[in-house]
Image (cartoon, rainbow, N blue to C red; front, side):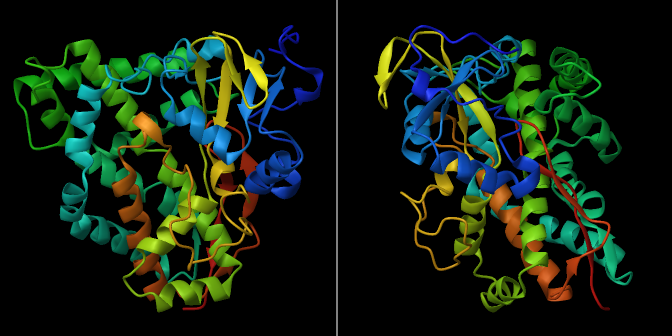
Length: 399
């Protein structure tokens, strides 16, 4: 999938980079690999990998791409373009203002008031999981907590069996990571086949869950069609079972090696909102893309209509032009800009839920296990994909 350089791409903007496996990923880690690439190159570069596309490497360029739906369309938002053309899920591949009715449905079920009302159940889930392995003095944090906690919370929200979670997460991984055992389109169709009958059942007998609420909602004088409902629900499930799982892995790998940071978090008590924002700034994960709508001049280069431009969201928060000493976690930063949840019209509607899940995890974990380290069998090798990930976080502590 290596492309020939188009005539409008200057030679000095070519960088041989696979955005899912940035240079030195294994040697220096996910975020430092992006920081190094950012420091050594202009704001916008072009790579022949993944069928050839641009990459926004500066925080400013990335923010401009995310926020300008007129110049940068979301209709194809994955590279390579041939894979992105198969995506078609809503509302992520619909440009404003057409995407707004669908966003309203998601926002209504994921707004701050709704999430606040879920806090007790989120906390109970966190406590139950931590208590299940606390006395062992060891856990596979990835398998025993991170891959269970946010998924259990989300599966309860949509009233789907928790036993289906591993299957759903596998399909989501096949749509976000290269080299899996199912192609992108196969995994998408598996989601559709699974959700189609469930949507029909919820229409006939709605409950109090998020899916039922979306199906019953009015969007411009009508209800969601079957195809719209299945597509929207698929996108919701992918988002609900992937990002926080991987984010928690990065956070706890960092905490395991930084006793001072753990103590600083403990000292904050329940006032963790600024700290959580700082962690999301430091550990941006998602690499998606946009399609250039018309020929434009952008950060010193000409972008042609139909060109793809990747937006690795990590580079915004770790850009020193926006945040001083950006690889340092500074719990006293004020309003640190980042794109951990994206920006612009497609900013993540689940951000309040993600923040609450992370805050509750930190509170309940550090109350019980204030001191812990990485276990010898931890594997911090990065896993390539649309969502950054570490392979396996294992932890140990004294009981």
